[in-house]
Image (cartoon, rainbow, N blue to C red):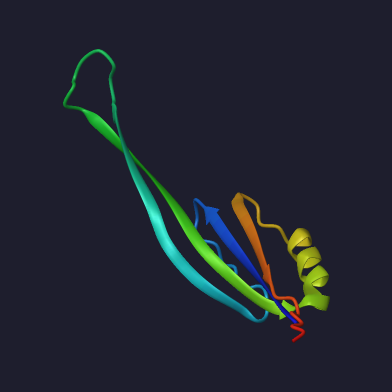
Length: 100
């Protein structure tokens, strides 16, 4: 039986996440927000400064056997990435026996 682990990675910087074997890496669209702030609170309304925040997203899909699932999870725990929000989804199939 096979299991599929889907990992969504969100970070402010583009992460190099080609660390695992048998991994399909899918780039998701990045979110970009622009903030405009007055430089001086009292005068010079025309003088403004702009800041930008980019959030990069990636989807990693790992297909593995169910008996190797624990090894993959332990590897992910040990090699966690700093400054990254991680969301993990599991999909697996079980044997379905139909009796007539």
